[in-house]
Amino acid sequence: EQNKARATVEGWRSQVLATTDRQRMQYSKQRFQTLYPSIPVDWVHSNPYYKLQAGAFENKKDAMRILYTIKRDYPSAYTVLDKNIRPVELLH
Image (cartoon, rainbow, N blue to C red):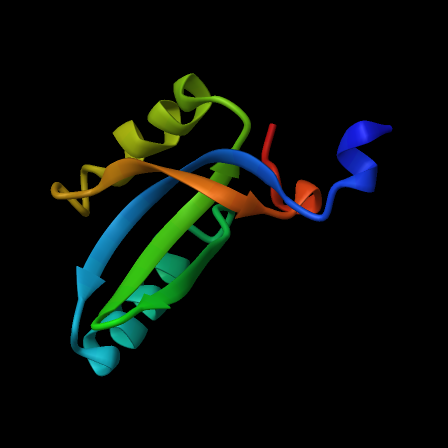
């Protein structure tokens, strides 16, 4: 019930890309969606960077499983803590 009452929760995502080039980010997002259609991906703008992030997990261990898969195509990907994940976004 507490999680339902909270607008956001803390969790983990895989950061696929950080770039100052919006077109590169958009291309990378489309490519990621083609390669991994079952993993949700979105971007955030943290001036000056566009950050492409995938998945949403309650714990780092679960995020690391997806990261292992993603690293085949995105070797520089890594996990990041996100304090603004909507509970409906969480993957199990």
